[in-house]
Length: 257
Image (tube, rainbow, N blue to C red; front, side, top):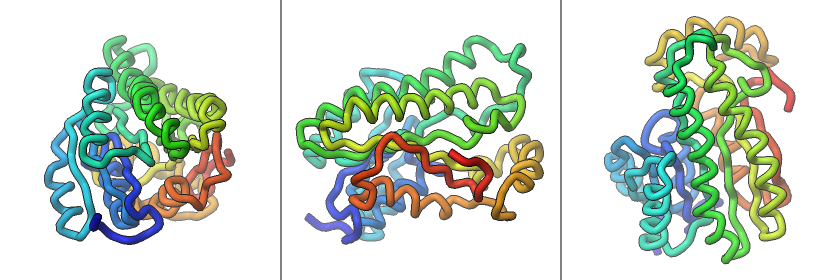
């Protein structure tokens, strides 16, 4: 079968928004633990898939718009055609890094709807079309990416994004109740402010938030993409087989969940 040997050897993982930013970190981390990774993104993930394969892993890219049901169905079909099963779903695709801070009354309805379509409907559609295959095999791990902002209500001027990430926490709790009888674990990973390449490019996020974020943390340092890897692999692997419906915050102790 090939691939790397690790905690996720020969498992099949879909990572939405997996081509860049934190999604690319998740894709590389899962592959390094032996997973066969499907990079599902609206942007080009071919080069990342090639990078993973050159490192001895297994990966493909499937162009996907998670807000569109037909696109999601095509992704699932392509995954099954290539790897015959789905063991792990990381619902990471979201609109965030490109957003500018804005007062809530100035948020355009079209922008609000776009964020909800990607950040919330996207998770629903992915679960809707992936879960039946997990149910059939009697196992699976669904990891929904939320944010510590859902608990703190900040950074300010980001009501649309924070609302969407609060919805993900409730989505996880409810979905875990429906899928638990089938041996499927559903959990939330909630990063704090992480200095990913996508965030660093948007100085508004860094300059407006980092001072307050650092002050709120028990661990007085910045968060970096590699800080999320251990939690991700825990939730994706058999180490978390008796953990479901939970939120794991990786934010240096800024919030308590």
